[in-house]
Length: 207
Image (tube, rainbow, N blue to C red; front, side, top):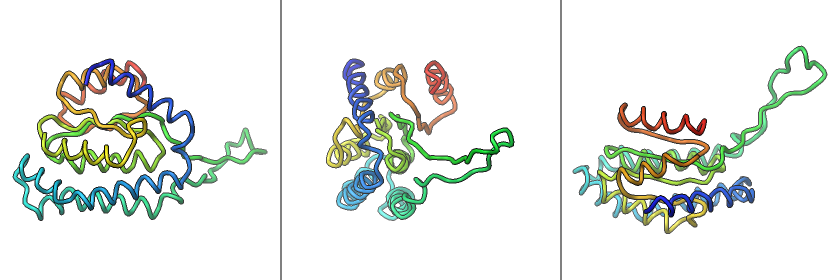
């Protein structure tokens, strides 16, 4: 995907987020359920891809990647309503006449960059949390686990409109294009050297 295409994709996601459609709990829960059903339906494809990329057995694929992701998904579905509630907090003495509360709200547009060694878990588990929090998301799975990245791309395309959740595949060029843009939050898992570069780029936008 070219820099121009990625920029337009991010702009569409910002526009969609600004409509407020990602905010209601009913919308978030529907998206989580769609994702869960798609994972369950495509589990054989995922197991085959993880075997091809990393030599993982069916048991290891489920125990260390697919099962953990589904567990996170189920937990989030169960607890989302309580996580979204405003919570009373103590009021500073200087504002003694007021009442204070903390109200959880989404960041906006989110980038998820994941590594090759747990390519499904460390891509989709952050996605679960980002969706639950009401964000739009661009996923960038690792180029070093191509079979799993392709299944993730198909799964995401099956579930979501790209103005809400989209996948960008490719290598360093795509990473560079993504990091040159302003995201509101970045999930990154990977090496220390790449992490430093991600932090440097993020700091330019105060991400």
